Length: 422
Figure 1: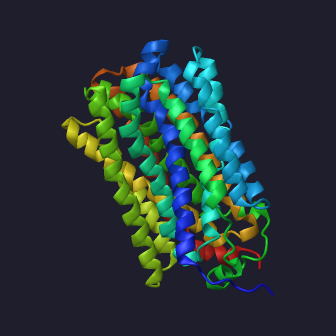
Figure 2: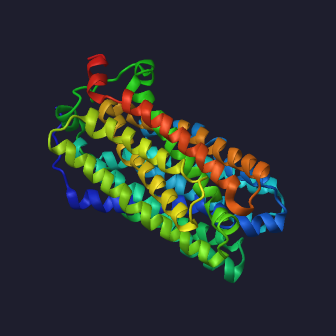
């Protein structure tokens, strides 16, 4: 019988902090394209659809890489997978510095997607190895806030680099930062050994077993969870690719102010994500069922987010539109902290990496379609005055609201545990 190691809070949180820094870099890599969209489109003479194609190319093989990485994480230490991914996605930034062809940039973004595809599921899997089930929402929320910090840092750093050395220099800076993290992780990273049998005793009772994947992937809780990722990532993909352009061409802010407003946007959304993760975890510790504290909680948050986003096309002052968009985006962030906890609660540990990775398939599909759909709307309704962007936000809000209703009705971990073979 395996002995249950003692929970080590200090070590667990230090590893979580390192992984959160990795997610900062991960999202710096994602957001850089949106923050250099205007000078890149001007220099390379790109149409909105062409730029949307570049934005979506990150996700062409993102899902395949995520699933492969998730299954690999079931067999290989997450420490080494994270190290290899960081090296790959740092290296592929460098060719963009000299790229003159749209296809070179697309090739680099495709490779970046392959490197970053497994990042979220593998990072979540790695963090789970340090925490018991009822303590997982906050550390995962911290990892997700690393993503938000990446967006915040991008809003401040990337316009500064662009104004001094041009938009291409950002990709060199990001490559260097990624290589530095890989070196630090090689020195200080570690694999958790918190005994998952403890989690089994606390929650599902099935953590040391395996379940046929067809049973897992057809369960209503799992399907609803995956749809929540699709809905939440649709608006995130719009923000990553098009928000800086909307601030400049839609709302009329100069590039330097647009970067600061992007940072303010993230400052608004960050505490919302943390507060929601804390509230959900608090409900669980008070004895509220996971059906309500996690499933319904996510669904209601998405419904509220969708309702806010659908208000964007109305004749409202620019600052109010900015606030509605930030609040709506902040509410969707609940998916990235609580959603994985739902899957971690019901999936056996031996299969957890793969189940988490399949969620990325849905974010990947959303991340591919969203920039293209936005580009098509911009080409149809124009970029000046913001109407095309706001129709894109209306579409995002509608998708988020509809999927929020589905999530509220389907995500029920307690019911799922009763359905799983014992």
